[in-house]
Structures are given as structure tokens and as C-alpha cells.
Length: 68
Image (cartoon, rainbow, N blue to C red; front, side, top):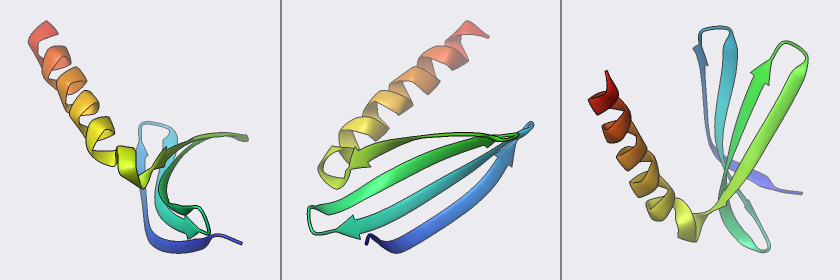
């Protein structure tokens, strides 16, 4: 069983997002869940990859801002 350490929930447009930091015998990870209607999908980012994930996401945001 995975232990939940941190949890955040927020809504954008008609989608509900959950950011959960969890821990299991293999280590800590971030689980990002998107819920839209009855549909639910998620991705897992290992704790060791969070900084790289944030870096890439920040670069995408900066590039998107330049498009507007």
C-alpha cells in the first residue's frame, strides 16, 4: 500500500486535477491525475525526476507565453 504524503486538488475549466506525493517501498513519487467527467488518467513521476520534469514544464510554459 502506498502512503500519501502530500495532496493538492484544483480545477481548470471542466477538469479536476490531483497532485499527490506518495511513497512505497520503491521510493517517493508524484502522481498527477486528471479527471474529466467519468474519465480518469494519470502519470507517475519518480521523485528523482521531479526537477527535470519541472525544468521541461517551465520551458514549455515560457515558449507558450511567447506564442501569444
